[in-house]
Length: 227
Image (cartoon, rainbow, N blue to C red):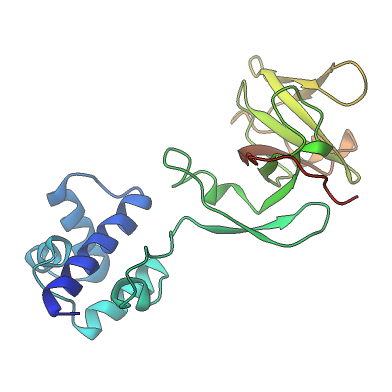
């Protein structure tokens, strides 16, 4: 592959990486942010982002160190798409293999990356009208979560998992619809000033974690989940 094509690939992947990290969209602002991050002048950053030149090994090393990617992410000769920097390993809540979760645009960036460790589970274990048995449900395990109205959460009471929906988060009180049992019931949890539930409150209620559901992967066919 000639140098021109490598430079174009490098710039495409670098811009994609920076966009996924919520860097400024406007070209000049992205150049300035990159220049500041890797300690080069703005014109040099512009050449890198425009595909006009390849980085030196020193600059490439600085980019890889700053954004936690390998050199091959930018310069491999494969025609396939590079790994998505938003991809995260998700552990099975009830055992099973780890999976890779790649949140779609609009969810990535500060959410769910900064929200805590991610887990997945079968939708068949979460009674809820909007969750199918064959869904893979991804949620963030948290012992002091922020509470947002109309957001669904996975509640863990000593290994017993269920789905709750926050129906109100005003007046320093979170009201959740608990779907355990035959009929939904209300769960009331006091909130801190920042609309978070304290770990002490959860412990007092016998709750190990209350984690927001960050997404589901819907299967196109029906199969039986291992018991």
